[in-house]
Length: 254
Image (cartoon, rainbow, N blue to C red; front, side, top):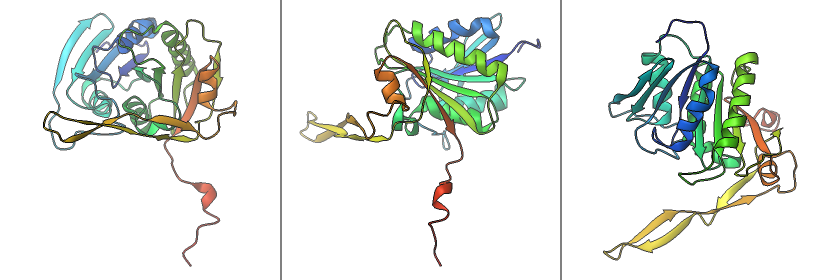
């Protein structure tokens, strides 16, 4: 890797190294520093914080040019971060960006998302980290607005850093002109009707993950789902410490 003093930006995703989102992100932030990308060789969505504990991981060089190195990895998004930081890079990244994901990672999706899992892993390693998602699952989605807001947040984080134990979850609506950026809270809610059933050729029942999101606070202008539905990019600070401190005073086993 280059020994120069410009920022080192590490990029990964969960849609795979060939996804349009990650490649547009790479091009969109190249002006901010040296880029090293390590992303799964195939889509690995919904991996959350999964790691390859029982199988070896393989790394393949995809592209090498000035200030840009891209690898594919046979592991999960979190594997990509761990491998990059511990084995591949010659210095600690100044920033990790995970995305741009095809599809929203707002509300409760943060606990399932491989995109956010990778950002949280960066946070574990003490590296300022951002997850970026677009509310469009299409392989050919228009990522212009997501790149714009992702780059803006990246510039801010490179300049000011992030507190220890905090990473950022940025979701951008699939519209041509986003109204602006709102700092939000995570929308409370859960998924319902989560499976569709069908029969395979042998007549056995199979289950396809589907579902509808039930927003438990739809009128709260502070939450990320409200912001996205009203044309704003939603930026939610996430924290590693999951301790329910407010429960301390009410929990007792005496």
